[in-house]
Structures are given as C-alpha cells and as structure tokens.
Length: 299
Image (cartoon, rainbow, N blue to C red; front, side, top):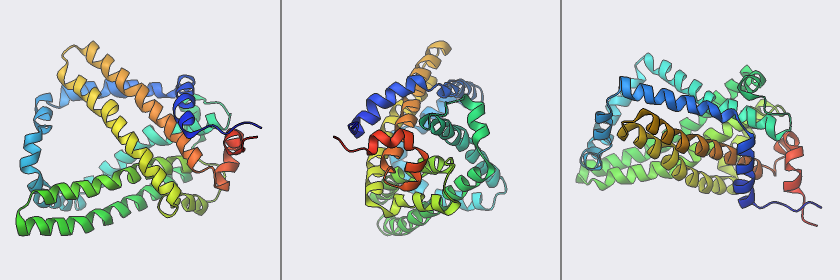
C-alpha cells in the first residue's frame, strides 16, 4: 500500500512543489503595485514611520486602548459608513481568500485549476452568504472575548495607572488571534465545498472550538503562520515600500518577499486543513482522490 506522508512533508515539499504548478497567485503582484501607488500618492510615508515608533506606542498605549479606542468604537457603531467599510473588507476577503480556496479546491479534486475566472464561476451566492454568516459568528465570539478582558484590564489600569494592564490586554487578544485567523481560513475552505448541507458545514466549522485536535493543531499552525506572514508579507514589503526610493527596487523586493511567501502559506494552509479535517466524512468525500494516500495505512 501507499505509505502515509508525514505532516512535515505535506507542508514543505508537497506545498512547494504545487506552488510552482499553481499560478493564480500572480494576482498578488498587482496588489503590491497598487499598494505602492496608494502609499506614495495618498499617504505620507513619514507619518507611517512616526506611527510605527515603539517609544510612542509604549507611552500612549494605555490611553489609546482604554480611553480613545472605546470612543472610536462607539462612533463607528453609529456611523452609516461603517457598513460600507465592513462590506468592502468582506469583498477584499473574498478576493484574497474565497476564490483562491475555490481554485485550490478544483486543484485538489483534480478538476484543473482554471485560473481566476473559472474559480469565480464555481462560486455561488449561498457560498458567499455562508462565509459571511460564519465570519459574523466568529467575530461575535472575538467581540465577547475582547469585551470581557477589556472590562477587567481597564478597571485595573484605572485603579493603579499601571501600563502593564494594556500589555496584558494585548497579550490576551494575541492569544486568540491564531484561532481567529484559522476561522477566517477554514470558513473559505468550507464555504467552497460542493457536498454537504448548510448546517453540516457549520458543524465542521465549530470543530475548531469543540475538537481538541483541531483546536490545538490550528492554534500551533496559525501561530507559526502569523510569524512568517508578519515578516515576509508585512514587515519586509512595507519596509521596502517606505524606506527605498528606487521604485523598481522597492517593488521587486516587496514582490519577491510577499507573493511567493503568501502563496506558499495559502497552499500549505489548504493542505493543513485537508490533513486536519481528513477524519470527517464530508471532507473525505469531497477530496477522496487527494486524501486516499493520506488516510491509507502503511503496509
């Protein structure tokens, strides 16, 4: 029988090999070029550099979190433009997550990739709606988690004026970030499944919180992904766009850092999702051809 590939092999050799065969990530290059134009024509790089100052954050963090942030959130809640912004962010999420998941689904089902157009044509309104509802529930969980910790950390800061309260609050938020990111990732991957009912997909989605293997495995994997993504998709490209004057050099560095690393992480995340969810019938049926070697025991 075919031997079972290790998780390390799936996330390294197999993901890198398929990365070079999977070409729809080229769209990210155009996003880098657009970001460079927006950054240098509509935003002052000097102001962004000032905002990134560590000393400024250390001095102002408690005031920003416990005084200015609640006022800002209240203004957002009663601003009609908030829905427009949230709608735009959701559409952006579909561009960078849902259609690549559709494309990767076709790839792993051996239907062929088909590129952007074919991946978009595979999508249905119900899939967009399911993704929207899953994200709304996920963000609701995060809002409750954040509010509970905000209340006691703010009370601590108000009573003692200790800056540590702000850092404890940020740490507690950071601990939830890998699961939030996993939820954003899994929602797209479950949304594009063609088999299974609306509620069966939600049953799989909530395994992220109810199944220890899925919960802890996701937390570890997405913690590592966040570190790599911050470095190669945010820090290096943003540093190049901010600090290099030569447009060709800064665009080249940003593209070389962002596009292959982000595309690799998307590929590895899809394979990790299939590995982690291979115990569930709905996913096994959808990706039977791909998962056959993964679930076949060694001879």
